[in-house]
Image 1 (spheres, rainbow, N blue to C red):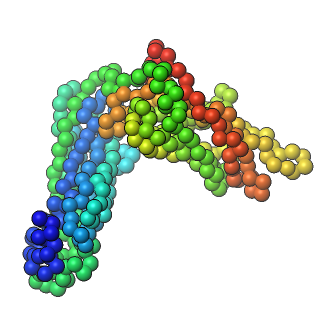
Image 2 (tube, rainbow, N blue to C red):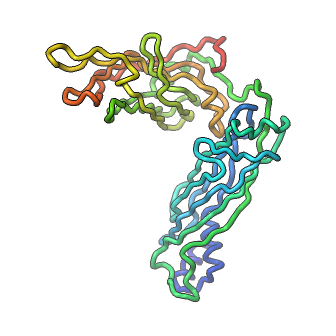
Image 3 (cartoon, rainbow, N blue to C red):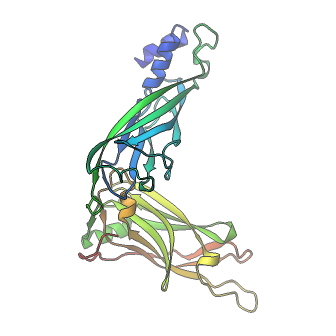
Length: 329
């Protein structure tokens, strides 16, 4: 079908109506929501765009914005991380373009589900969509056969959500000590100095044996600083990042009297399991319950500029054994 459309378009024999229908069929988006939501948790959902169905040489830029969002009879009008009402996204469409998804939230702070009875509800969205023709010379630009460069439409999308009590278990904590070595082996941390006394912390995982959802904490003696949070899917590779301001966050010895280098700042970097992060995903329902600890990480200020940091030692990853009685975070 795409080749037939391409030949008609190249010959200038395709009507505007059919050209626009062809463009919209390249992005048959759908709404996917986390199916079970506890009272107090955000309603998490994603706008999913499948792989593009276009002929070679055809290209569009697809943009969308959420005009209205509703769960049952309650309007989610408070913007959350990633945006809710008024939030949006875009995607370049061309032959061979991969699928994409944009995650959003309706926070419980907006009383999204507080007023709803427990049980099944429909998440409803009104989505304003715009398509920009980027096909270049593949289509003539002169009337009457030349298509408009920009066209739009509004679509209604739905998905199902089940509201459960606040104390319901929607994320299982897996206390399996045998997973520790495999988790430890797949997780690494990197430290990248930036200006102003900040240091970027990047946590990566290469195909963990179980889903990981965590808060990243820098720990020095009895003090802790929250650095980042994230989740990593079992069998997949991914990363999360955060920033630590060492100048004010971590105690460190001053340079010696002769004006030499600063002594390294030492801390443990801890990945702590977090149900809070798991419920902010679309599909994580069980996570490993142990911590991953990079012990005695040492970062030193640069010799010429004390605002910059570089790693002295990469630290060693070690996984703690999760006690079977460990409560959910």
